[in-house]
Image (cartoon, rainbow over all chains, first blue to last red; front, side, top):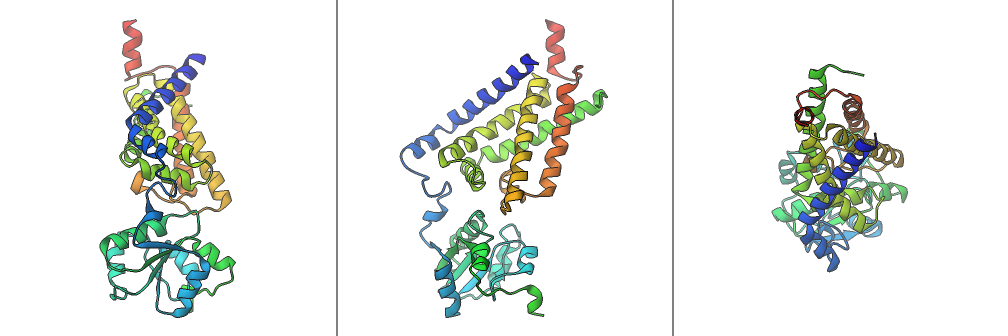
Length: 161
Length: 148
């Protein structure tokens, strides 16, 4: 059994070291101070602003902004920010869903997902930004969790019917 | 425990194949995977990066050795250890109520949930079966032992 354990440990250590050696440039970039906010640079994206719940509520009350819910359709159906449109990050038809929104580029767009732990809102916001659909893109990083725990208004899919 | 040599070969190819595929998808986008690791909110940033860069290569190595049948039991133990860790991680994440992409298959990853937990448990059962079975048919280990 000791022999098998030694083999397993050797495999893990050797392969792990190879992985680190191959990725040395990334480790050096980290040592130089990169990736401090986010490994993917999503939080540093120039056309994307991360906002808190108060700013999100402010934009909501102005009534001009489009809220985009990047969670799954099932989660969206259970409850979402009133008026939010569902564009799940994992949905292959998200391009069509997005084109169905207001085509005015200057309309503020606020993307959110479940909460601080999820990254779908960042991915979707970057994807929208890269395609140039909207000029004012915000990520509400606290997302659904923060919105509901702060007692903000919510809407369910069956409320509309 | 299953001892049929054809089923054992299938177990090796399934577990090995999944590990190679999963490692490869992560290794081509190492920063994406490092971000996935950090999203679990269990490791500090530097450790998330180290795990994100190293783990895909460990998976690929263990998977390749399982498919080839070289250091078969060591590779099965490494795979079983990783799967055990993944199962604990998925369970803890579900208990904490975090809504996360698992990061297991790069951009093809699904959400952390019961389906993923079941997949990992099945793979763990296969890996443990490979680990506990002594005869090694259709493997480079058997060629090695004959030539010694």
